[in-house]
Figure 1 (cartoon, rainbow, N blue to C red):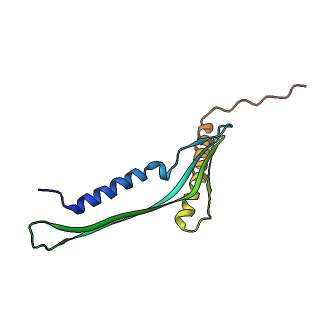
Figure 2: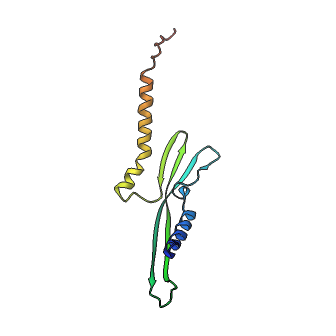
Figure 3: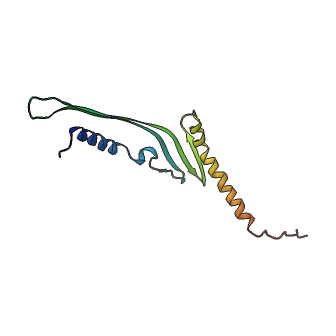
Length: 136
């Protein structure tokens, strides 16, 4: 059985979308500065896709088909992840407008607090150094 023309339209549009968008579109390639600071761009990607078609009646044995497909997308830079001297910060380009945006902006701070907690617990297990008396 042969492929219906609408399948060809959809496959072509989806292949083109795959070529345009990849994981590096959302979390970009890291940029390393001379002092060792790493900057990672973060973007919001929105895609839309539509496809449609119709078979038309024909007086001959030839199949008549009309159809079309299309896709559109937007890429909006929203933030930069900055890693410098062991600190991770999220620098948002626009202010937090939704609860989800606010929650995402707290992730680096939460990560720092958890790391500090683990370091504190690790230090508790170590033997304290004996106090030294000042020499006269």
